[in-house]
Length: 246
View (cartoon, rainbow, N blue to C red):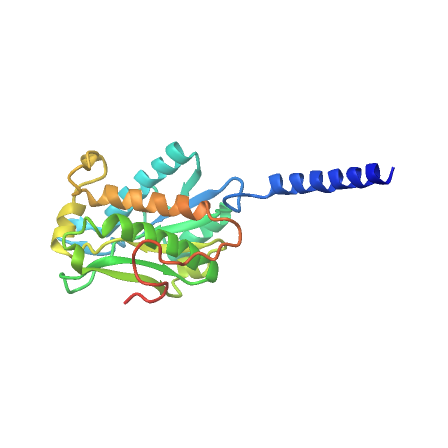
């Protein structure tokens, strides 16, 4: 009888362990994630301009192609802060994402500086949870964009930057700003001139917009696959250690 009671007790404990183990999430902390994409600038605020190339147009084209990939290939719910050339304030953007109960927000930009020889990739965050998302985006951007850059050896690993930008400061979900490449670089500008739909065949590695879409897609998917409590930020993409970029 004692042995039977001991065996029964062991089975109960083992069954409880199985139930607990099966119930543990193996990837991702949210069952039904919702992604909020924010194409930076728009309307009366075109962002950086290089000849006929406007940052707002690049950002929107990339965001729309990324939305399609996330919806059709990953079956994710996606909302966007703008779907046309509209003027949106910073407040409009974070309030919209907050109102949609988004799981994460990615604000898509294209970098630019006066020195047209500079090129590289950067991700911006503010809160601790933002940093984990920023790191995944940065890792994916670096891995995808550095090898095919116009000058790979001088493609700068700017890494992560902590900045109190309103769009990340006041978001109620993990949020990050992606700055994949510099449109002020003349060869980057030439490659960025093609829309995603114009260069669906990316075998020649010249379609930067399509590459950016793929990088951001991978970064978002990788972030959502992180186990709950994962601290991230390990620089897997080949760039500098977290927070050590120039």
